[in-house]
Amino acid sequence: MKGCDLLIEMKRALTPELPLIDLLCREEGLALPQRPTDSAFFMLIKDGNIPLGFSMVSVDTPHAAHISYLYIKRSERGLGLGDGLLRASLNLLDLMGISQVLLEGHEALTGFLAHEGLKPILEGDKTLYYCAPREFFSRKCKGSERQ
Image (cartoon, rainbow, N blue to C red):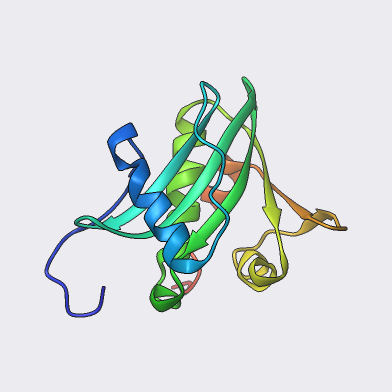
């Protein structure tokens, strides 16, 4: 991404964009996530046709969902893309009327999710974090200072 002139997009991935997620997984040595279904979809961050990250979102009930992947390409970390991806994913869920979201955490995400103000509700093989999107967005953004 460094030195590029293109616009970074964060959006719900369309079917023709799914190979970009496969490409990122292969490049980063990740297991390929399950394919989207009627109740599951990907959010994608891309710079032109270069995938930078993705999340996998599953809607479980009309008011509850979970995010099972939240991944940013190793070379692009530390630039705020993870925060943007989390916010884009939660914003879309909020617009869909989802009021409760569980995020699957793992060792590499623990610090990031804590920095985002999320607290674990269940720890074990996979730590789960709870988020209410409306409450999340009512807080000040990280890094903002009170005047």
